[in-house]
Amino acid sequence: MKQVNGVDIEKLSETMNAIRGNPDIAKFNFRATNKWLEGGHNRTTINEFDGACSMHNRAISFVIDEDEPPVLLGQDKGANPVEYALTALAGCLTTSLVYHASARGIKIDEVESTLEGNLDIRGFLGLSEGIRNGYDGIQVTFKIKSDAPKEQLQELVDIAKKRSPVFDIVSNPTPISVRLDN
Image (cartoon, rainbow, N blue to C red; front, side, top):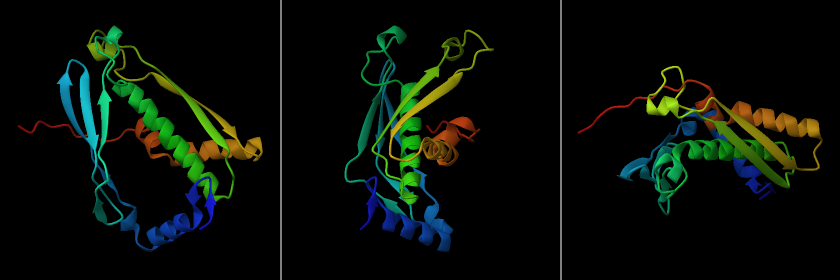
């Protein structure tokens, strides 16, 4: 088993070849269940998903608490949803960068990213129709330790942007269906 950056390169190659032979293997359906607790406090549970032509249950469910800081009338029982959006973006960009570096045989010693999102809550509160409800913009800065030249590291950052599913979700319109089921 050959590993680069903790990624099994042989399995990655086998997976990519299997997908080339059967594109249905690449289709995934992820699910999350959210329950409101009180105030701004919600709890999300993540376990099962469909992918690689079958359903999967994780060994343990992931439980994520979301809340607001006191200045936004919450009790700080978890990061708020827009902070989790930054977390999802950071994790996905980093994973994309590392997997693509690994596939190219580029050794990465360390990756750190800093994300900032600017948001005006007048949109969320309905106080101004001209103000967006979500982030006005997100800034991502990477610090990467590697023997690879800076140009190659920049190329990896560009590939991460191009291939990250979460970057795609937040930077392109994604159809979202919201319905009431009583």
